[in-house]
Length: 518
Ligand code: KIV
Ligand code: ZN
Image 1 (cartoon, rainbow, N blue to C red):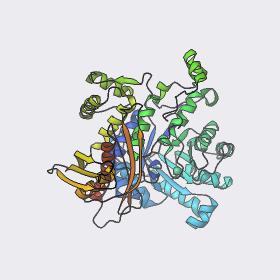
Image 2 (cartoon, rainbow, N blue to C red):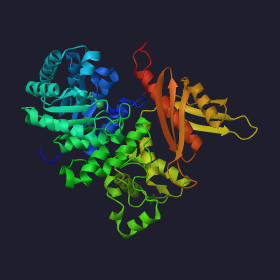
Image 3 (cartoon, rainbow, N blue to C red):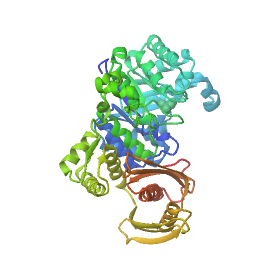
Image 4 (cartoon, protein in one colour):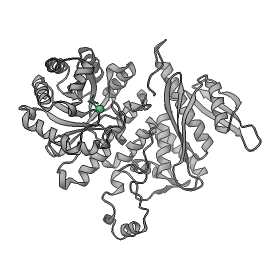
């Protein structure tokens, strides 16, 4: 590795997937992993194989099918965990086992109930054991930022001697401050005698809103790998956001003197895909990928931009995937223009999905005069997630108004079976649709959250519905968009029901309901 390149270790599919209610199924994980490969991340942490059969399967499939990045599997410092991780990453052309073990006083005393001496021994044994399976071993002393620095130096040295090739320094609970975290990395560089044999890595959580700042401080002090997630999703307040680290380094190369291999023009498409598949909205003012990230409202700013862009813009929107002209296509646009636009937006669709997306585009173009990038992105994302649907919406009809009982008739098709139709009344048309869907699918859900927003401007804008439902203690997200908000509501609900149906199908008989969502 050249010293001026930072390795990007993406953990969207592992730490990111630990966001409450954000779990993904295997096809969705594979879709994201493929997009991460296009984005050119260096390492994909694909999951925690011992955690569940689903996690194991996803890591294994990604290892088999995704070319380019190293594929990593997480393991506690235990032989059984390492066996599972080794087996899951085995098919990868380039593989890594990531072993972690807590080292802070608090974790040793209350969680592991072990002495420091035992921890050093366990770390050495685990790294040596993992080295039997592959040469690329990462070791993470969990809660490193709250670990006694003298002990951290000892553990890190021992892990490298045992064969670790990357040493990751997690700020597991987001407790660190930039100066102190940077100093810790500098101290490890200065005091661990064999540190040059390993790559030092940062892994910061965002509990105090400092994950990116801490990561940058660590990079400045000499770390050469950053662990991060798309949109900063992750446990609690999340992890450091990949797009923010990458663009900070690129924009302030004068300070950091280091870049990454990331194809930044694919950042926005990746962000949208992750948001869509996890059901986690990106806030409008989110740095780099939020809708307002490059919007200039103040007249003085707009005037300045028109005179000279750099007066108020430190990055070019097109460098992260926003298009220069937002008005793109209409009903007379052909397949070629459509394909080009989709590619410009950072998507890489195989021919069959492109055809399906183009058909959906033509239908949309009949309803909506101007089709914006946001409309296209929503349309493409729908094609991606619809692939493994068990229930599909064939048609629906609602009546509602003042002094009318809201009623819905819905027709659904379950895979290749004959379509089934039913009807129900509800408190409103959306409720009536949901009650009817419950009757047809036999999967009654409780609606926990329902949000609707317009994706673009204008009266004919597409409406996007994002919701959360619960069935038998399983909490899932659903999302869909349409120019008709009732249709978007129905499709979002079905999107969630399909996740439950798939989960039911893959769960072993008698398995308890998931504690977390999908
Ligand atoms: O935050 C953390 O400590 C982790 C480790 C497993 C690396 O995610
Ligand atoms: Zn973490």
